[in-house]
Amino acid sequence: MPFFSRIIKPLLALTLAAAVVSAQGCTKDSKPAEPTPAQQPTAAAAQPAKPGEPRTIALSVTEKGYEPSPITLKQGEPVKLVLTRTTEHTCANEIVLDEYGINTALPLNQPVEVAFTPTKTGKLVYGCAMGKMISGVFMVD
Image 1 (cartoon, rainbow, N blue to C red):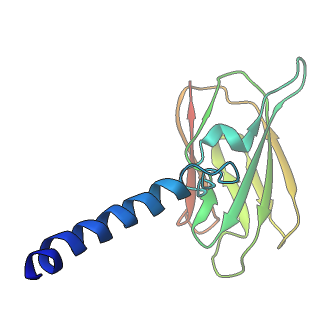
Image 2 (spheres, helix red, strand yellow):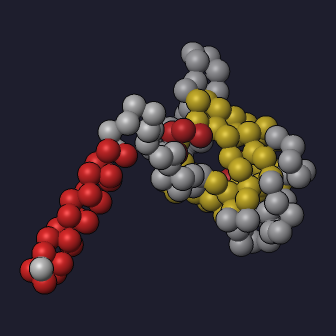
Image 3 (spheres, one colour):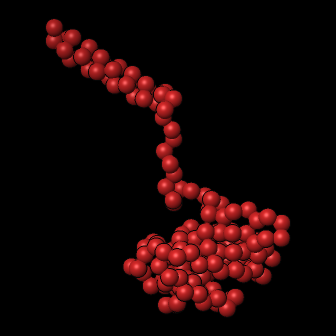
């Protein structure tokens, strides 16, 4: 019986494990895993603009900084940022966008709206008042 013990038992165990794994993947109740924030596309943070209204983009200010970033904007398309600061553990307690004269305080856990219209294409860096030590990026097409 040594042949059975050394060869057949491991093969049976492997077959049983494969059957269990494949059965778990075929249930109707299973659903795909939710993507992490880093895996979610940046479009998820933006709502399409209705004609005549600015495009609304939700931004969170977390311990990781301004999220999501980068975000693509269109030159000449009005934008309304809705920023919510969720941490006190960084210096990002405001948003500074020098090119548009924006320097707006972000109180903890309160959404703040900031509106502007990008006038130039390229990389637009925004961030905290400490020299944008914590920053985010808009790519303007």
